[in-house]
Picture 1 (cartoon, one colour):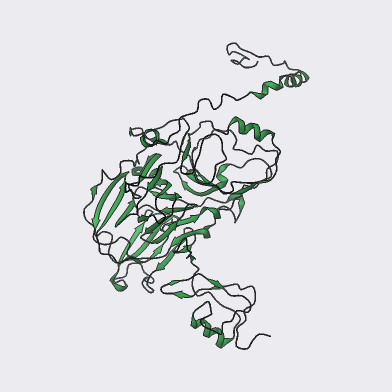
Picture 2: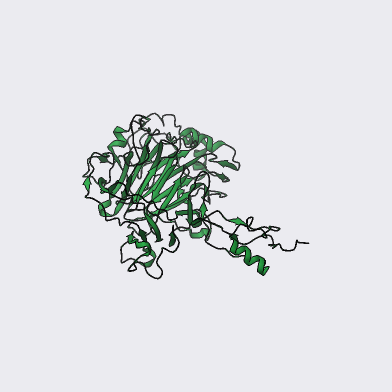
Length: 545
């Protein structure tokens, strides 16, 4: 029999209760059968709820606030969950105005400020904006000057008029890009390097592929990319990203997106760091459609995490770097840009743990196209066509029968740039190491090595786990990629082309000529004879006719 004075909750508990910790909330603790709520100190919710349950002897409970993720040893920050949600967050309770965005007077004399990531006149579903309530308005800054000497490795104009970029049909691969020397002090902004891109941010159309290599945290400085949204992928070392909307700790295996116009600062809690960036101009990253998959699978919206409001009291001198049309400009202001006490809206940075991706490529036969691994997509101006799909390759089962399992030989309109976060890449068409890159041009033929083909066409197929301990990604772009001078000449990481890679390819069809001719004879057709003459009607050079 239950003890008198104890509230018994049936198993399983269907709600989670939160308890307050200052202005935030700790992780939710579930209630299970037999929990003793007669002692307020032991209850996983505040004393008010404890008294309510004790006095009313009820056997149910309600959540007291929204669920927040995070709060671990590896990531101490808290997050709101969801993709594209309209969030509301306040570091001091009661700051957010009710039923209006710009009241005559904001609580505590804060300044109201709106950030728009879409045109004012947009379809409602496409409107992205955030209202911030901050200690000092962003406009309070000194004059802007061009920071020409800050970083000359950044490119954003990918047109034929720019002699610093060029299109090449040759496939390429790069070994891991080097971290800065210990004697050099290089932060995130000064460590940006552009690999290639398409279009131009002044046209609000196109994209860019960058990497960063840094060994120093940003000190009293912030970065604002006005050209486009940045999808950031740390490969070595965590990034402690402080944004106007709050903080994110992003580790290798996670991605972070910081939209255009949002100021942020990057610190390196693990020391030197390296990673990849894909930037899109004039559009925003979205979740791909699920189509016949239905309601579930791929990247779940609830697994995306947006920071909660967090602010600093700091009236020191700050330097702000703005990237505009690929060039850095800078100004000085006498207050921190991270002074937003509360905010609400849907234009806010977020992160996603790629290991949570739900693979849908477990099929019985045939190969799925690589877009089945799509985590995020960005639209082009052509209806129904993306300008880029971000694909993730994570551990999964391979179960296909009577199927060529490696990536098939093909040519397609898309440009493919691949990188490796950790582990060992199983592909054989080009070298790919963690911290390196590979590039395949639009419509250019590519595929696995001849040795891989021989193994894949003769081995006994069994269900097997692949990609264990490995995470790779692909930027699958529907436009040609113009590569920079840094990528082709200055990085020191470019592998020379291997002209002998296909010298050992054997034309196995010729081993079956006797069998083929028997089939042709049975069909009343002439047998094949080897031809070496000029091509003409019914003939092929060094072929058969």
